[in-house]
Amino acid sequence: MFRPGFRAVCIGLLLLAGGCASGPTVTSNYDHSANFANYRTFGYFSPLGTDRAGYATLVTQSLKNATRREMEARGYTYNENAPDLLVNFNAKLEKQTDVRSMPMGPPMVGYYGYRGGYYGGWGGYYTDVYQYTEGTINVDLVDARQRQLVWEGVAVGRVTTKHRENPDAAISAAVAEIFKSFPFRANP
Image 1 (cartoon, helix red, strand yellow):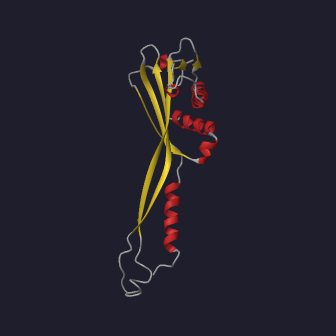
Image 2: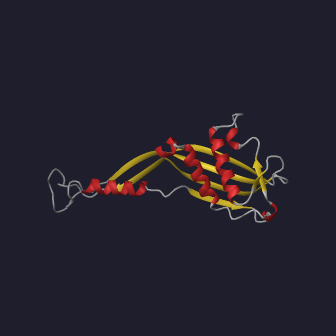
Image 3: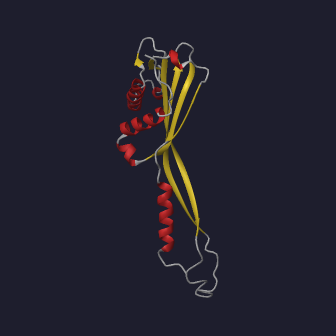
């Protein structure tokens, strides 16, 4: 037989384990025919994908700061007038729903006390519904001469209260994760 609080503890542990995340899921891809040895400088697309409303957003400023830091750490030089690579990005938030079901054991005392302890009816499932916000950041590097995408990185993850309270840090961390998958460095 189950103890009265056992089912609640099991459900709580399941939800806690399911809610743990190590960070965003990052994917990247690049044009294998592109000669990355030719790229030494970078600039930004105009207008950027995050500036569709016709003005520079705070998200754009955070993304520019983070991508500039990552590109310069890899030996690339910022050149506003004649860059080899153009950086573009996009960001979006989307509501998501997560439904989780867990089988429940047989009832504690049977059917109105009848059959208690010998056999019992099926307990059914415990279902919980979670709504959360999912954030996506795309970073594109485009060959400025050919106007062709040569590398892209995408991070997708849950947006938490901590992220909302400090969006600069969240964006910076996500861009750093994206650039971990960037395999190239500028030639001196």
